[in-house]
View (cartoon, helix red, strand yellow):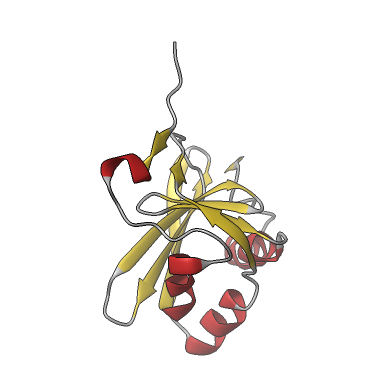
Length: 136
């Protein structure tokens, strides 16, 4: 079985690369919808409190971006909902990388965003949750 890596640039989309570029619109989110797995079932937590959103977004530090698209089956997803109700869908590739299907990869400088989401989900579930795993 062959694995294909699809580049959105091949279909003529204008993509900004470098230190954030077009990806910075995630910092304008008014709410976040976090998807995670527990016992094989997808669960969601939506956070809309402006103070909490500001604190969560402050943990995101973009190192670089590129326009590649990965074919993977994410366990952890984060939808950034903007003030105009536009939704930016992302999924975790690993603790320091998000896949933004419409634009490419977001490489984070550290794992603070991942750790913050795990902290919030663990508090909600009353036990340790890892957004990258199927938590049993």
